[in-house]
Every structure is written in C-alpha cells, then in structure tokens.
Length: 252
Image 1 (spheres, one colour):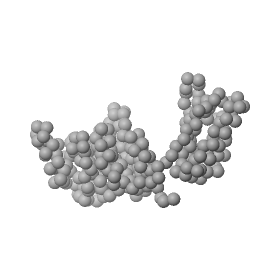
Image 2 (tube, helix red, strand yellow):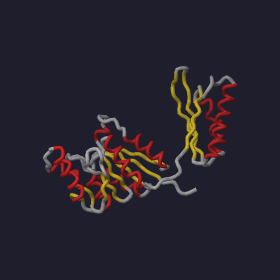
Image 3 (tube, helix red, strand yellow):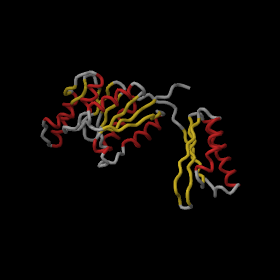
Image 4 (cartoon, helix red, strand yellow):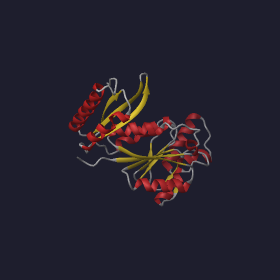
C-alpha cells in the first residue's frame, strides 16, 4: 500500500486560547482531510507570538506532508502570521502585486477605501503562491508544504475548497461503529485482544451517557476493507457475548 499523506493543523490566535473564540476550524479540516485520505496526525494552538508560530511551523512542516494554519492574516497589528511564515522559511515578506490587484478590485466593487491596514492582507512571503478566497477576496497563501488560511470559518472553508485539488490523496479511511450499552471496562480486555491481531486496523472506545445510562461507541477504522470486516465482526461478537452474560443491555 502506498504511503499515506499526513497533515498537521496549527490554530493561531490569542482569541482561541483565551476562550473568547470557540474554534470550528479544526473539526472541519479533520473531516475534510479524512474524505481525501489524508491522515491528520497532530493539532496545535499557539498565541499571536511570532517566535512561537515560527517554532511550531518549523517543527510541523518537517514531520508531515502538509501543514494547515488558520488565523492571523487579517488587517490588524496582531495579524502576524505572514511575517512568522516568512521568518520560518528565511525569506522576506512584502506586498504581492497579484494580491494587491485582487484587493483593490474588491474595494472598488464594494465602495470601500483601501488603506494601509487593509493592504496588509496582500503581504505574503517571497515565493508564496496565493490561495483563492471566494468569500471576502483577501487571499491566503501556500509556502512549501504549509497552507496559510483565514481564521474566519466561512472563509477558511472556501480556502480548503480552493486548495483541495492540489493535495495528494490517499485511500480514505473507512469507519464502522458498534454501540455497546455498557462501560469501557466491560469490553476493554476483549478489545485489546482483537486489536493485537490487526496491525492495520485501529480500534477506539468512546464512552458517553445515553438515555439508558452509560454506553460506549466502539469505533473500528481501516483502509483494508477485508481486515475491517473481520475486526468489526469480532468486536460485534465480543459485545454480543457481554450481552449474553448480562453485562450489557443490547447494542446496535
């Protein structure tokens, strides 16, 4: 099986870390990458501190096929992501003529006066390629394997649509869920035994409280459909055995 592309997400912004802004971008990107067959392996959140952003970008871009950042490319003083990316790659940051043209046309269309702050959104590192913004026009950019996108969810979603065709895809991970009306402790040992027999299957247990009390979603994931079918069958059998013993009260 060919190597699976991997990815990391870097959320940038004091507003996320303070709790003022409730992040919606990570979940969207995770779902999007799953559909493309790209494994999201790590996610981080850093403050609007240039050295912290630089350190995180450099750590992630050497380990993963792609890095996706959100936040910090707006018009205000604390929007420093472009400068941090430039520093991470060791290149200068300046106004990109293509980005300036896009913004000037948009400002003219909506009757808004361009000023120095708004034109900050046209600054990108030398050598970057622009990411289209179909919502509010101010582009993101790609530098090497790092995709720099807006923090506003609607804009970021559009940027993901724009970059998706350029991404290397893998075989999408398939997932099956078995719901056990019982706790993780009831099925932990059988799950561990099943997992040990399937190197390319990933089994997770996720407890929750439902109408009938504590329950557990048993999630079986794999790109190998034959192994997935076999592992799922064993998980179902283990859950059925618990039901028969009276340790669980039914499952789907």
